[in-house]
Length: 290
Image 1 (tube, rainbow, N blue to C red):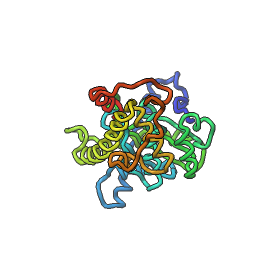
Image 2 (image 1 turned 90 degrees about the vertical axis):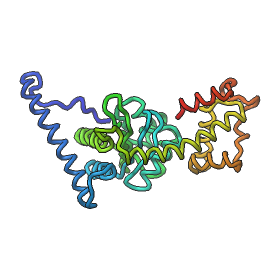
Image 3 (image 1 turned 30 degrees about the vertical axis):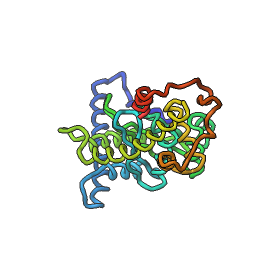
Image 4 (image 1 turned 135 degrees about the vertical axis):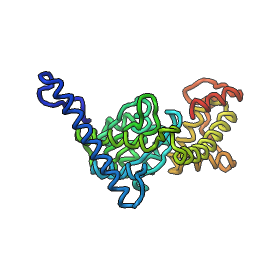
C-alpha cells in the first residue's frame, strides 16, 4: 500500500516557508493537470465536463483497467451510479449485493481503502466473497477513494486494475484530486447536490431500496428474524445463485421464491436470539439498514 505521508520535499525542517510555497505550487499544478485531463475527455465528446468524464480521465491517468462511481444519500448505503465499462459496473454492483468490499469500507472510515491483490490472503480475510469474485473476473487491484469534504460524504470512486500491486504515490495523489473534482462536479454551490444528479440518484435509490427492503421486511416478519439478518439472507441467496439482489427481492415480493430452508429451528436467525417483529421495530431497522 502506498504511503503518501512519506512524501516531503528536501529541507523540510530547514526552510518551512519555502516548503509551504513549494507544496502550494505542486498542489496547484496537480489540480490544473487533473482538470485539464477531465476537460480533454469532455472535449472529445463535445460536451461540458461531467462525472463520467472525470471517472474516465482518472482511469487514463492511473493506467487502470476501469473505475466505478457509487453515490450515497446519507453516508451509509452506496448506490452504483456509473462506470467506465460494464465489467467495472458489475464489481460495484457486486459490492452492493454482498455488503462488503473496499467502496463501503472507504465511506465508513472516511479514508481511502486499498487492496493491491484481491487474490491474496489478506483480501480474502477482509472481503471473502467480493475478493474471490473480483479475482475470478481477472481483477487484482482495487482502490477506493471517498468523494467527500469533511463530514459531507456523497460517494466513492473505486479504481480497478488487472495487475496486482500498489499504486505509486504520485498516482494516489492524482486520484485524490480526481475525487475532489468529482465532488465539485456533483455539487451545485447554490443548491447542494445538483438537480440532475439528485434526480438520478433518487430514482435509483427509490427503486432498489423499496424492493430490497420490502423483501427484507417481509422475510423478517414471516420468520421472526431481524431485518438485518433477512437482508443478509437475501444477499447470500443472490450470491449463491449468481443473480442480482434486486432480482431475488422481486421474486420474494411476488411469491416466486421462498427462503424457508434458511430459517433456523424455532424461527431464530442462525447464531442469534429471537428478534422483535413488531412494525415499529421493523421500520426502525429498515431505516438503520438503508
